[in-house]
Amino acid sequence: MLKIWGTLIKDNRIIKDEVSMSETEESYQENLKTCITELCYKFDVATPYWLKSNINEYNRRHKTSFDENNFIEEIYFDKFVIEELKPNEK
Image (cartoon, rainbow, N blue to C red; front, side, top):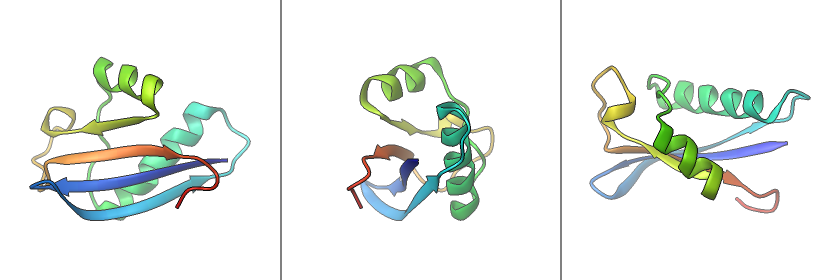
């Protein structure tokens, strides 16, 4: 089971947050992709592109943030942050 907390941040304030969970028997990457796709749908934003810095940060900290450099379309927020939650969190 994978739980991802997603937040949209504008002017250093959380404007939206949601938790997405994936319990499929797929690989970790597929579960992560499912959670991010669900969060993007809930936030009504495009799916961000992962840059090398995002991959490195997520692998180290199980958390990363996406900004205007990760989206093709214009965004109405400053950052989209995702963080893996442990089973007993949130």
